Image 1 (cartoon, helix red, strand yellow):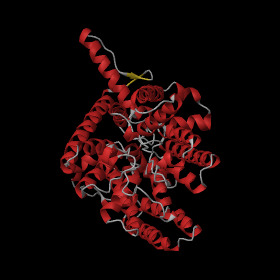
Image 2 (image 1 turned 30 degrees about the vertical axis):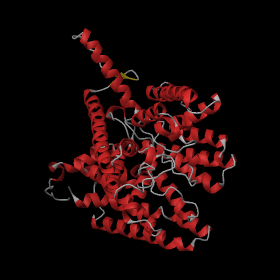
Image 3 (image 1 turned 120 degrees about the vertical axis):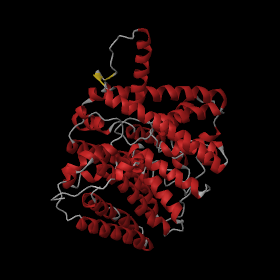
Image 4 (image 1 turned 180 degrees about the horizontal axis):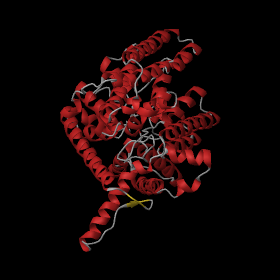
Length: 491
């Protein structure tokens, strides 16, 4: 591990993250919240100065194309930990304990949305805006956003970018980094603006519209309204949020081709997209059938709307709600729990295992059944008519096993700590999948403030692990990851 190379990357990232506090200061100034200028201004200034100090320590002149894989992983993990800590500082000025402030910040930056604060009514607009904007920053990925404004990052980004660009990677089919980052950024910004305009036109106040657009396209889900989207009592708004959330769960690179190049066929004929839509339709119809059968629903239209909203909210890991789903039957909750684990598309803002991995697992198991009858056959797993390499396939199977093992381990541990099975299972699913909402004590009208400190710390770790897809964090516990590099001339 070479500290100078690490600092050469983390320093500029912190500088630009510090600058991101300027819009919050503008909101505070606009609404006359002059008391908010100090916490946000001071935090932003200290972040910029820290980033600049790290950059100076690195001696600035570094060939970042020589960055090693473990250094890239270290930068990715430390960056997320750092911005979570920095983002927590303003919350401490509003009477949150350090642990609760860090929990809230981590939940926002990772777009988990597992909030400590269930009701921000009466709170300064600046802190509400920061909560929404920090979700938006984290939704696309901190490194991805800053790749667009840091040209010096282009070389090192080839190592760091795959850590945030979720889903299995195959180097032979990965677009150029510069094009990927630019396309992701343009698509993300376009969808954010469209979401804001549509919500505003539907009658939502402008401030709420921008905050809800931030949190919906980022799959964060935290709304200025304490009752989430349900609180607006407007079906048009519900439909608009459904569309925004739907987009947040689709691969942004594919969407770039759709929105900016008109490549409709590349989206429609993409197997992950077709599975994504198919899973949503299947589970939404199944949930509608269950609701009409015993959850107090008499209107098919209302059951359909609520089902589609909640299924899309959960599969994209947004976690907002348009109805009190905790009052639904256990069968309905089981459906939501299953799709929490599945998650959205690779390269999207969604969490979970990801649909592309589910597709591979299905085809892999289908092949295994075939090989049992025809042991001499040669039949590779193909996705979109392209064979998946054995290395990529091994990584997919390994990730799914790690994900499920982590889910079971954390669920058992937190169940023991909280002495509540529902808290353990739904809390773990909500945090590792970055969904944010659970059932029972962690349901739509509850929050995570009542949990033990130890449980909050565990859930913060699972949020980070879920956002970075587990492996980068686990590597921190390997001895060889920390082997000291012997410097050479020029290092």
